[in-house]
Image (cartoon, rainbow, N blue to C red):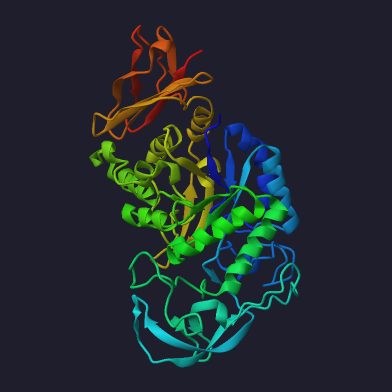
Length: 492
């Protein structure tokens, strides 16, 4: 039996033309660490061609094969390099999770005349105009690909809204009027009145031809890569009934129980995550954006944060079987749209909380394992250089998850500033004890189990040099240093 561990193998500022090669090179190392699945960025050609991070999707069927948007390759490499990367992961027993960006398309090839209504950007249910004609870049013909793999042409009938009128060169939010509806599609939340529209050309899921084409793409991509899971971008802005249908047909068509995780970013709002899960009838997992936000707050609060409350109103506490837990991602990293990074001192604590407990499917962020640096403009309009240092403890924590985080869990959440828990282990694995503090150093007496009576335990993170002995009743006093975490395993 293995503990599942996902890794997001990219960040927003991943350097150009190297990622697929790096995945191939590091696949063996990832398997050795105990990483069981790798989430890859969108592999399709974006509007910015070779500079696109991938979330400005232009042509789903161009994986770095055709001369489109000023480049043959994508930011991450060529189609052949992408396929080689997925094969390398599978060869090391690591599952592949691909990223589907179905909410919108960008970089249309031709404009079309279309009837539209301009809406209030802060309340999309409030119209700011009567119906009028605009010019919208809603026709996608993909001339560089010229019908290879799919002859489908996207046009004005495939979209509910756009953010630009080429005729007036005016930016805004325009609701397109069509035979599929003169309104937005229904969402589960009333944020901004209706948050169907996010950016670019918003896809119309009430059009059956659109649904068929997206299923066709997903099936085609599986035939190339045999992916094991999918990450679904921006599901907050996509009708839940669509994904319930899509996932059912995809799994049936390829004959595989594809894992799916959706990005519904709602920090502080567990009720929205659970509502989406109910609407999709548990067809997909969701990232625990509530827990990530708790980590962000705790890391900025120091000893004023009550660690006993760290899991309050989180998805992992409510629906652990559907919670993908994380410390940071490409959207929360500094200078990005949902910026809410976890402060460096707290990251080892946060990773212990997602990697060494029984609940949730943890996801490790690339810069936390390998480090990263980049430049970008901040909200102040100035250029900033950002360094994300690797978390030195993370590699050993991954080993601990792979080898020791098994069996019964007992919590010792008795103090606001210091908590601990033990994993007893099972027939195949020795257990571990974890102690952490966001203030002073601490000792917590915990029962690791009578099977360890007379055994020595050591801190595998090397923070506490002294070993501890388990008494005849199976109890021991486990320590950690101030503002730190220690992971105790059998010394032998």
